Image 1 (tube, rainbow, N blue to C red):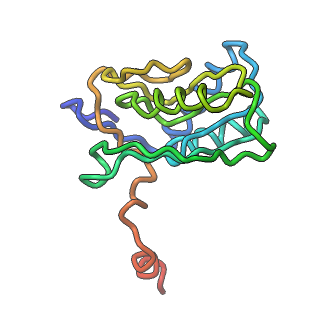
Image 2 (image 1 turned 90 degrees about the vertical axis):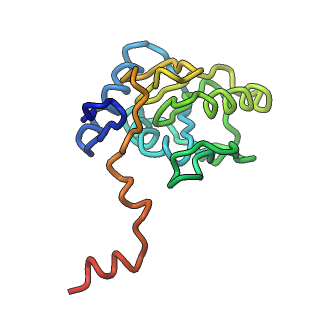
Image 3 (image 1 turned 30 degrees about the vertical axis):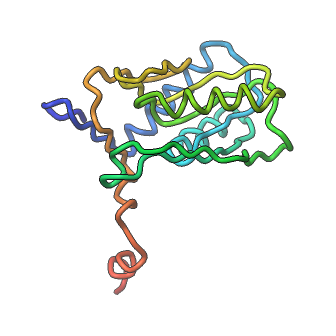
Length: 174
């Protein structure tokens, strides 16, 4: 649900999963065949996992991190992992790169440049996200929702960002 001021988008679990299913349909209807899904951790892990199951393709993972300040709301220095975790040796062939959103576009652009320069076995690379913000300098190959007001997206699992084990113990103690 987008707030009236257009600055915040609140997404329920059902909406989130529906959007990932719509992303799968877009990818399928494009007719493009790919060998592996490479998701960017953390945001791309949930969509990547679901797409991996739907398309019955192996899931590779690359960690990136750029949101650190102001409770994770300010973009800082981008860190890209040196290695990709993949179940089939080295990542190769046609790869679908998955993240949750194209926000500024900086992360996706940097990762694609790094992959193209350092992973010659990748023969074709396309990108898929759930949301693309208007301010993004990067336009993914597949996206479900375009957000012209550039809202902050409140994903349904963000409550865990501030939850600690002690809070869970208090919640579940009888």
